Image (cartoon, rainbow over all chains, first blue to last red):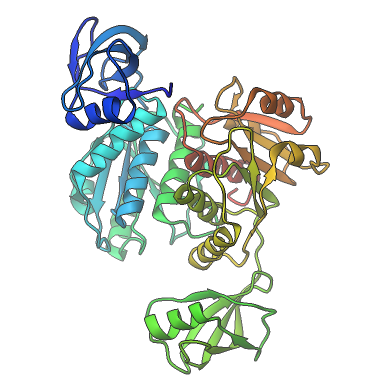
Length: 240
Length: 240
């Protein structure tokens, strides 16, 4: 049987009864044909991974019972991914990849050259699916979009920002991150048209900003997101 | 006017007349409304980037004339990306990302657990589009799929292979690549179901293989491709 892993409402604990929503119930009992007594893996984002058993196999409102803990809770490093929304499929891709690569929060930013909108509820659902698939016990929050200028004005003290600056001279990412301290960080990926001159000036003026370049070719925003997350996780995160 | 960059048949040289195919002609003169005398950028994969001028604005068979060289030819490092075909959209994504990240060849491999097919002509067209978009002057060849066992049996002497081994104990990628020599390399990404025991045994027995792990979460094949390419380019490629 294919392994099934579901994100459910917690808090998970032994013998807790877990209600499934209609989409989960239909998937589990309609598509995957699971029956009473079958087991699967569940997580709630806060209490690790547990084995659960099917108690009621109804396609509209199934029930599970939480049994044994399987893996402890594991949070990714304290890293935010900031990105300007791009077209729908690529935005969904960025959210999925952020979860697989390991971030604490996904924060869309509206830049001067951002034209696209973002459906936060839909993107949060993508984050849940990605966590179910990649074995994570943590689901990053997909925040409401905020204007970049406002986010920078309210920037939290002590959080460093890796700024992927395609248009300007900056150090290659490996050198730029070497010797930096771990701790709270964020990565900023620009829109396909880049940052406006005013935005670039503000970013360069911020004390906590580390500008980096990602190779000699122009990367799409979704590629840049995965590449930047890889570089950061290798240098300062949980890929060490 | 939006910047246009087209891959054309060469060899490019001053005053050479360049015929456009019907798709390019329709795009340039139907969609983008370019007229005789307008200029755009062209490359042929071997002779750098040139400025060209529209000589005949026909939506079925337009003509350009090659004018001045703009940028020299730049080949990516001698790196192959080997991957098992996955579902169509994600395979297209892997090919697109390989071009942006910079590889010399894209080589699909059929593993014991590979179920998907691949349309090579379509994937080659994706590689061309990605090169047009990312500013590359080189288009990697998308090779016909080969069985993994055959590819390993015919493995070229002196080419190292980075094997992304999700299921087993291997060094984190940064440490595994540190101190390795540059030169001909390949990266191997497995199918969603991983490698068979026989394949893993063969791979571990090869002298030129460097197994690596890509962090603590399970990565989809398309994510693993971008992450592995990033790690390699940072350590041994043209991102240094």
